[in-house]
Amino acid sequence: MNTPDELTTVATFSNTAEADLARERLELEGIRAFVVGAVTAHVVPHMSDAGSVAVQVATEDAERAREALNITAE
Image (cartoon, rainbow, N blue to C red; front, side):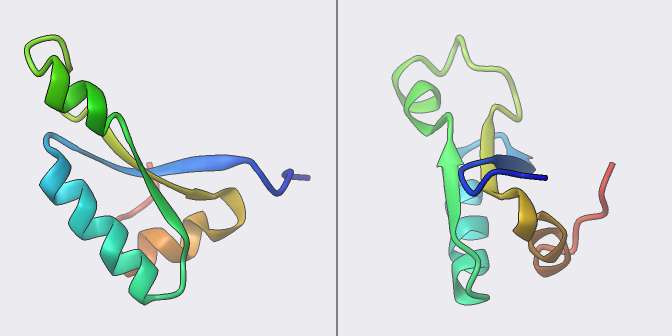
């Protein structure tokens, strides 16, 4: 059973703009979402890996979030 604070990454992006757009799309669907890694991507871009900006949601919302973003689970 998942705890209420448990988060799951549903998508990764190479930049914060794309991650923010995905977060906004999820929030329009009523899914609370968080962008993780944005500060690192801005402050030290040469040290961040491609795809290092992640969008995370509550684990219980992960399937619905992937559907909203048209992403199939890996």
